Image 1 (tube, one colour):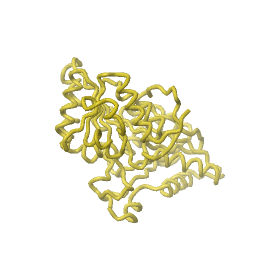
Image 2 (cartoon, one colour):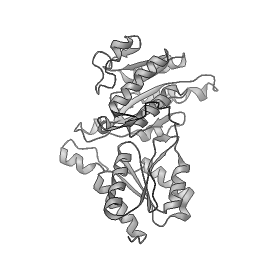
Image 3 (cartoon, helix red, strand yellow):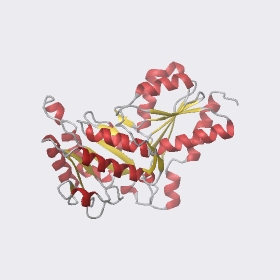
Length: 331
């Protein structure tokens, strides 16, 4: 085992995949000479050269389209979009082309493309630079959408995404880049579409992804230590495909669920999770599924207002306690 930051895990994976497969190349704004806005690509231009670590113009639609064409011709581009907010400039290329080419060509053509992009608030970057719009992409057949929460999963899922023959949107969160965790030295590619139970429990199922999966685990461990509440935690890891079986099986055991997400509540990922639980475990529920999400506002720049708008640890604990109270839980 090696302890790495989330940032280091991504950097190591890109390096090892560039070494492993000559068809892998990186594309994005300032990823070469500047080492990337978040230093994920630090040192890679010097090691692999400008043909495989390509600095692009500030033109997301243009270089995403170029990457789709390169993927169709046999390369495996890994595109870095500086934030998920900027992916909206390439929405047509991602949704109308990358996601649809395999189906429109009758399976004769694949698009082995990875789009890495961070989102999330808490950095005082303003409303147009702090969004979590993964729902736009998780909604689209033909795309795969993954959202690792730990350095180990970041490494394993990025390996899997680069080797996948379908386009994969690889979601990162700015708040996770400096987090640390153990990464196996012999780590293998993860299975895209498989959630992970990060803590077994019996009283309630707590579900999250990306940053909120880490908040879920912290809340579960603290509530167990302080109040003896035994919570099962699911890290979704993948939003499309979604591991509905793991979610449903867990709720059938615990009879209650709380869903956590960093995006807006209305039409959010949590709504899909709640519907999944209703379809597969309705008769096992002892209380309605509760959802914790950010306030339904453009995220404020002001630090106190931004903190108030984002879902917090205290919001999670409150939702757990309210759900358990609704089912008459007693220690």
